[in-house]
Image 1: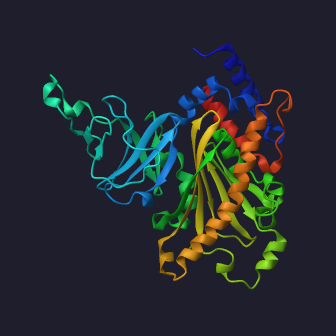
Image 2 (image 1 turned 90 degrees about the vertical axis):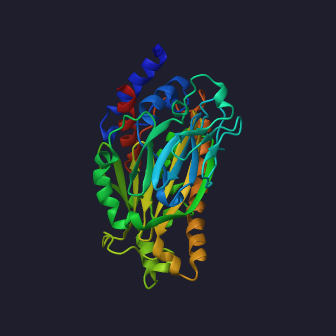
Image 3 (image 1 turned 180 degrees about the horizontal axis):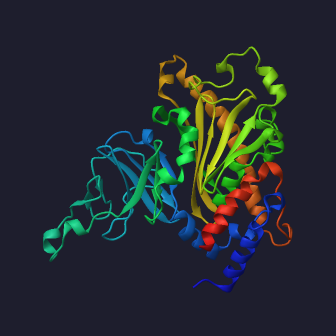
Length: 391
C-alpha cells in the first residue's frame, strides 16, 4: 500500500501535466529522487515497458552474450542458433551471478562460478555436480528464468514483466519513419558505457530537447543546429520526433564541400532529406529509446536505470555495412566518435550538475519551472510518464 506522501506526489504530478502544452512546466522534483516513487516507476514503467538493450550486430553469432543490469536486477542476452533469449544472470541454486555486468563474451554454455552448475544457451540446466544424491531433483525445473524479448528493426528490446503490447503495434509509425535508413543493413561500430550520477529521466530529457544547445553546446552543436531552428514535427502517445535544420551560416559554410567533409560515412540512399537543410531528426520513443538519424548514420543513446540517482548510459553509432570497403574506414569511425563524444561529455557534465542541484531544498526553485517552446518534448515525455504511473 502506497503512502500518503506518494499519493500527494502523484496528484501534483498529474495536476502539472494536465496543463496545456503552451503553459507546460517541469514536473515535481521529488520524482527524480524519491525512493517510493522510484519503486512505483520501476513497476509501472521500467518493468512493464520495452527497454532497448542491444542491436543484433552486437551478438551476431551463436554463443554471443551481452549482460546488463536494470536497478539491482541482473540479465543477459544470448544468441542460441540465431534465437535471441533474455535470461536471468542469477543462478537458481544459491543466487550467484553467472556473468559479470559488462560481459560481451562468446560461450558454448554458462557455468556458475559458485557450484559449477552448467546451463545451455537456452537457459536449461544440463549438469549439477552430485545431483544424483538429491531425491526427486529435476534438471528441467531448475533452469534460468526467461524474459520477453522482441527484435524491432534489428534493435533488441526486453520487457521484464512480459505484459507489454507487441512493439510492431506500439512503434508501427516509428518503424515507417526510420525504414529509409535500411535498419537491416546497419551495424554497431562504436559502443561505450558511461556511468551517470543522475536519475535516468534527466538523460531522456536532455536528449529530447534542443533548448540547451544555446548553453551546454554553445561551442559544439549550436553553430550547426541552433535550438531556434528545431521543431516537433511528428508525435503521438508513444514517441516524439524533433526536426533539426542547419543554421544559415553553417549551410553557407558547407557549399562546395563533399559529403565526407560533413558526415564521414557514405550517405544512405533515398533518404527523405528535405530542401530546407534538415539533416537530423531526434527521436524519443517512450520510455527510453533515444536515437538520432543523420544522412550517413544513426546515433543511439541507451540509458538503463541503476538506482534512484544512478544510471548506465551507452553511446552507440550505427552505419551501413558497405562502409567497410573504404581504405580509411577506421579514420572515418574515429571522426564520428570524436563528434559524438564531444557533445556527450558536455551532456554528462550538465546532467550530473542538474541532478545534484535538483535535490537541494533551500536553493533549488520553490516551484516548477516553465518549459520553453524548444523543450516541450519534455512535456510530452512526462505526459506519458505521469499517465503510466497513475494506472
